[in-house]
Image (tube, rainbow, N blue to C red; front, top):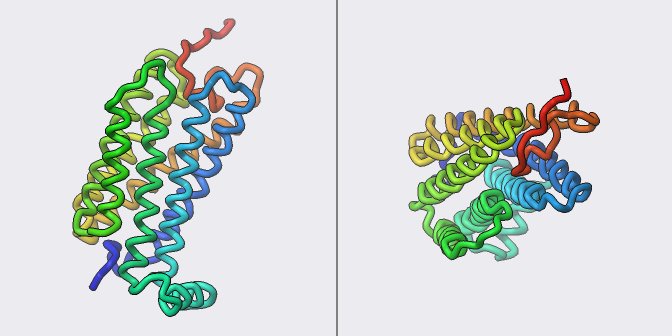
Length: 251
């Protein structure tokens, strides 16, 4: 029984993509949280950093699960053997469900945290959405046949995030906000391709599209590190998430 959607020729490459995305996400998370500590009035940065941090943890959960499933060498073999023979789980299928339950759950929580950037009003619908994706994650952890619901939920959350940042971009006009919108948009498109990922080649294509979104996010990190410390950064720093008008240059 095939317990992963990854086509055989793409095995291992998906681990590299997940590892790369983890590095990008954790760096962005650290930058956002560090900037929040310097300016605690902007709680949006805390939400942004926390959300990306949770998604980074999700990628690690995916990497560790796939390493144990794909390979039988060195420490990985010992870990896998301990899990199965120690009866921590009764089968590889159950281990797969547990590992990817945390992967999917953390991604949805992370996306919701980013979407739920501080707002003056609290809507009941937000809490209903939280309950929905928590229950959905539990179902997905047991019935892998409904895998596409996870990607559809992630797509909806990403669309809401893009919509939110587009409103912010119309107010501040920052280039960094625009780059973030592009990264989130491409990531949203990847989720739609994942819906059809039972067709092996489409799963690989979705991974590559997702990789593109993280490469764009990496370019944003480079911009932040290069220009963000300047006295007049003109929107190049991590504060692109702030919902405030852009300041005009003095010339």
